[in-house]
Image (cartoon, rainbow, N blue to C red; front, side):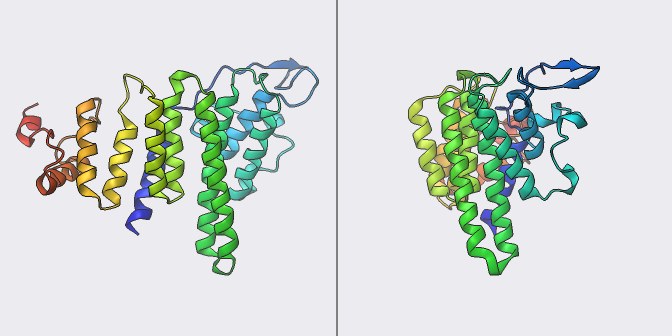
Length: 276
């Protein structure tokens, strides 16, 4: 039960800070005074396909997108759709957007693969939820969940290879998040090791999140000495979270590790932090 709680909290945190999502200005045409987002042939544009997928999947980037009724006229009313249906429709939209290849009007294929990773991850979570709810169909939904997570991970790897340098570290975080959401923490550690070999450079203004994720995984697995050593490296790198001070939960965790394992040995003293 403790592991499930950790995963859920991790996912919510990732959703709230999904910095890999970028929204570009909408290029639209006007036909008879009605705004229509279509390509030169009159079909739905690649850009609109991406935006519809973002809205359907509830991606954080969708908060800056406002689709007009005539831009989703061929879709069922969104408030009548189940979570699974919306995610499957979103996945369909993203795949259709990829058919436009390089002509996505403000988006790039790497972003679309990242969005597919997001949608498949949520679908995997939804399938797992249904497996718990519908016991007589648990095997079917667990298999569907596994396939969805595999697709999510595959698309995030594709995104990592295709994204511009400025977005690759964010994408790597999302990739590890998808592996964690699948419940395979050993694979998550392996994935982090693979990413570290690529030597990605985090944005100077962000935390070294991958190191923190690795330490968190060790903590959940009960491998406290390893967790303390990795947290030590995280603090050493700097740019740690602003709430690394008492009485925050992360500070209390690190204080416990320092007392029981000797690491992290570079945790600032309470008195020093309180003086600041």
